[in-house]
Image 1 (spheres, helix red, strand yellow):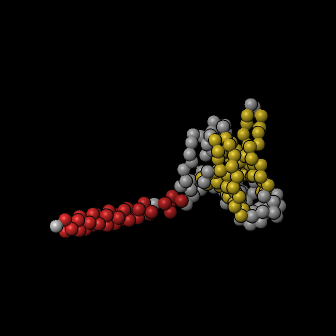
Image 2 (cartoon, helix red, strand yellow):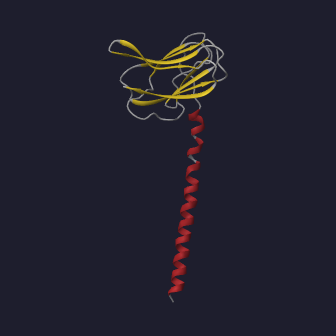
Image 3 (tube, helix red, strand yellow):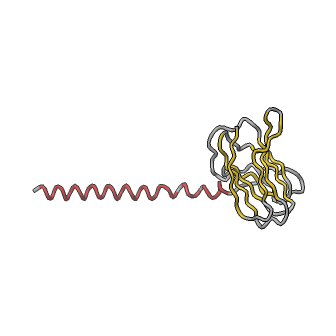
Length: 161
């Protein structure tokens, strides 16, 4: 006698599980429509006239974690190779240049930060990326990288105060 009740219970539980799974599959489809628009950076600021492909301040959609750094940091790019160089801090778009640039970095957070530098082609001349700040009234170089002879994506970390 208990066998029909057990079978009925199994059928009811199975139908509830199937109904729950079908609702979960439909829910993620709505949010997927928004990220492509948010992931495309839009130019908002040029740093100097005559610099090609220069945009900064647009977010790639990835959020930074932690409070903003109290020190002010600056990206100093020297590009004698005239290779397009793209820079991101903590996944956030800083800009793209094929010449020299000096950019304030407002997205730096206290603690560890990730710097990503992408070179569109091999740098046949000097390409340097420096991150600088001022401590105790003196200029300090936090990161100094030379990409001559290199191409592709390069990642480095630095700690900010």
